[in-house]
Length: 560
Ligand code: ATP
Ligand code: MG
Image (tube, rainbow, N blue to C red):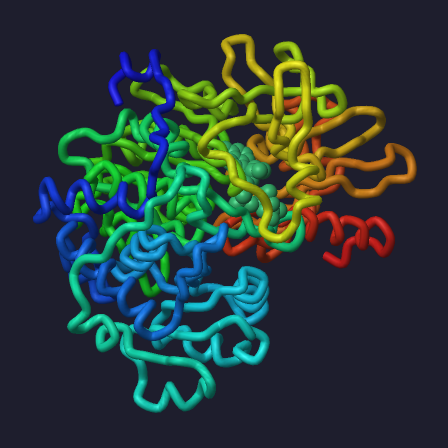
């Protein structure tokens, strides 16, 4: 996208559109040898996969799914759900392409899920087929009795005895099932709103919810992805993210847009994510564009400092949690490019972004509505757009191709996600924000996380941002702690950087640090040092957990 295209942006959603076709068929026909995926194995060896390979394997997989009875195409409004329980890999990309291209609904699943998490999603989604590998078979076996809809498992490197562990199911080796299948498969003729992907939220505020997306969700992502990567695609671009492709940030901010644009995507399975491994990967494999969630950035900052990495990055994007001024400044020194913060959620993603190629970032501010999206701060009750500087709910005007079709099997929750206002129908994000005088948007906190103290409404984001600039603080989560006088006081839970030990002096120094920089009513009257920050698998701080701890402390006193 060029700056001219950006300013005159208009959606072009064709009458018929298929996500799987759009990310594979064009390049397969025009430039079949172009590299779609570079897969790096645990030992750092790289293997290239072209669009020819991707198209051929996806076609063979579609044939195998039908031949083995894993999916039955019956012309239902929603196609059969195909679970994809794989790490970043060529097979994971193939599976998403095959499923969406043949009119099924692909169900991305993280290999980090334990039995409960996996059971909830596979059962809720009613998946009939599952594509996985040997490493995940045990956890699938543990829950198989609760998955009445599951008919088949295709397993990469199926262990010899494994089929016997799943009586009544078709269990086949992935490569053996694809071998000899035809290398073309007719694509489903789909409308842009036909279901393509069922993806679950992070579960930061409760049970993860299934968000059902149409094929057009990819088109809806493109403008935000393009600006967050300083006008992707440019010659030499190459994308990588440590974020799991089972999350919207990995799948639709990186993998699918990369494939769509013909930008090679690096798939990497680290044994363990460390700063060194990440920096080495970026340098050794010529990565030019990366999405690094704030949690990954914090870890890299803690472990690796800022010196001498010699990277050749063109764009770094980050989002999913507040980025904060400290990480922004650190990123500038290490990456040699400004981190572009973006904002979105599983239900309606990539709607706001910064773009340092166009304007410098404003610290503490997320960015502008990305081209094509109408994002505003509204009054939840009447649906009116609020003036500059007034806190309210961040909302996105419908229709918008990036918006989900609805929550899976939950029409009441879907209905509650929208309200009608004078300008039309708004999708409510459940996040509080503020519009800046220059039209950019800042994030105050999630609805449930806003603290009410002595008549003030306090957002945790700004305080956490300030806490992270204290040298002793590694991670910070801010919540309200019940207080007889003020209703709630601001309580900070922090983990410490290397070389610092908890104590009354340190707590005081941290509290003062905030009081000197923010409004007096915002500083944390309680500072609790903890060993580990409670996080979701996507790296988001679970403030509800911290709130429970704060309630216990208010009642019983701080054990520390
Ligand atoms: P659940 O809805 O199940 O509680 P979740 O909301 O964490 O989980 P996601 O859809 O993965 O699930 O996360 C979206 C949320 O992440 C947003 O609603 C917002 O609260 C937060 N978020 C995303 N981007 C940013 C950002 N740039 N700054 C601050 N918060 C962000
Ligand atoms: Mg949410």
